[in-house]
View 1 (cartoon, helix red, strand yellow):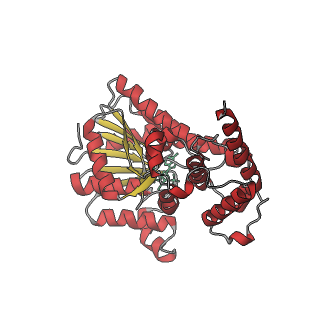
View 2 (cartoon, rainbow, N blue to C red):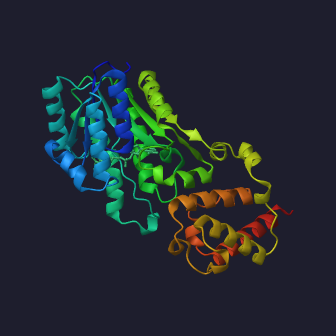
View 3 (cartoon, helix red, strand yellow):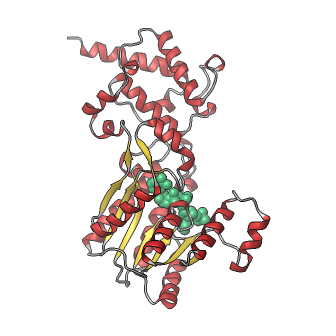
Length: 361
Ligand SMILES: NC(=O)c1ccc[n+]([C@@H]2O[C@H](COP(=O)([O-])OP(=O)(O)OC[C@H]3O[C@@H](n4cnc5c(N)ncnc54)[C@H](OP(=O)(O)O)[C@@H]3O)[C@@H](O)[C@H]2O)c1
């Protein structure tokens, strides 16, 4: 079943970048009536204009209020509600209120989510909890509170991080994997659910600030909003438990097909273009300086990468580059275990020597 004209749709996390884009698309294209939830409270409807006058236009709440006013002025029927997707009481009450107000709920898009990237060893339990709560607990609660509703479909906004992982994203990857599994389980019970493993939305949402870095990693390219929404429409009609919607970069092939990916590795990154520890150190220092936009001459080769500002996305990118250079995979925590230019150079040299020794008869 596709999208109903004037259908009633609940979008959790609906005041985020993707949720608002989906709301606009559903209202413009289908005259849908949309309930948008978030945890943050909005000022009362009467106070929106004065709030906007008193606050900077790039304040996150200003952005949300302007988007809601735009939707309203385009004639959209939208209802923003404060509700935590992971709270069974709030969500159960919300479903009852939607039915009171609109008579039914026809579909759900679960777009509530947060990221709290960081290396597992240094993460605090509450950050795991926060990430899992919005996505996984939220999906479980939605499953419970809509159990009696004959929904046409449920969509989970999952991520390719659930398939590929990502340094610093152990909790986020697990939460997305949970969505994929829950979708399969619900379909087995004839409750139509599609988990969309989204790639990178380039124009709206939580990843907009990371587009350049992710593009550089070669794994994903940014998707424009319009084709992403068209893919959402196809996903709803497709009735499949799990699909990937992503613009893949050249290195994405490497993840699933190492043999093919080698063709995409630049000549300068092929093995055996360095011979000594000093040469390798120079090369690592130069690459690190470019990644961090630092002057290579000022770079301290004994300073820890994390202290220098190497974040999880750069860790993934650099690890992949090193794998390409060596022609072999590396433990995911290589840059944590060998966390300075000096230590990393020594490790990589030892690794190559030991491989060379193994290869000799
Ligand atoms: N953007 C991408 O490229 C991308 C790629 C793959 C997957 N995804 C997934 O798609 C979903 C939407 O992403 P986005 O880019 O729109 O992110 P976003 O702009 O950060 O929006 C996420 C929204 O979720 C809300 N939220 C967080 N926890 C919540 C909870 N417990 N209950 C209700 N609302 C909650 C947040 O608002 P409050 O803080 O006010 O609650 C926020 O508005 C996320 O699940 C994300 O993981 C996004």
